[in-house]
Amino acid sequence: MALISEKDREYIKNLFEQKLQREVKMVMFTQRESPLVVPGEECQYCKETRQILEELVELSPKLKLEVHDFYGEKEVADRYKVDKIPATLLIAEGEEEARIRFFGIPSGYEFGSLVEDIIDLSRGTTSLSSQSKEKLANLTNDIHIQVFVTPTCPYCPSAVRTAHMMAVESKHIVADMIEVIEFPHLANKYGVRGVPKTVVNDVVEIEGAVPEQIFVENVLSVIKRS
Image (tube, rainbow, N blue to C red; front, side, top):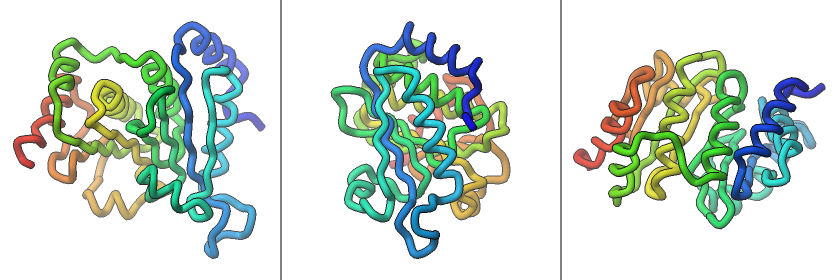
């Protein structure tokens, strides 16, 4: 059974036809080879994540999908710095590094984030304000943003989208969406009691959904603490 409804498929297909420019490659890491699972079976939510991506790639010739086994292709996972699954990385044509990353199934409200991220990356620009873009253009420090979410949180996409747009605008930023239900050890590590919660370089924390300007300022404040 399809995970993307026929109505949504038609809408997204038309949207991609109008807005996609460069090709975007989706690199997914699943789990098929491990002593912890039955041979041939995938990890929890890996199958559903792969199906969502397979259905998406059918909607535009400018979308490509590359699927890797996390355990069977460990060298590839290491090259992309993937340490948990399911993982979905977005890479624009002409680029090698994946700066927009989803850990966990991009479903619910976060499915919209995935679609919008693909469009931004394909076009190479975002709807961030000119002030935010100027600040990011001058960035020279490497920053890692982790946004903790749940699929049912209506406020989470705002934080995810802002973090991912920052990664589109700056090659010094890697931004992750992390679905906390699938990675409870990370929720415990970072004290996630509510979502969205954003952690920057393991130093700065942003609680809840905040306006773009405040989000960007808080992210960039990590430079002074380095």
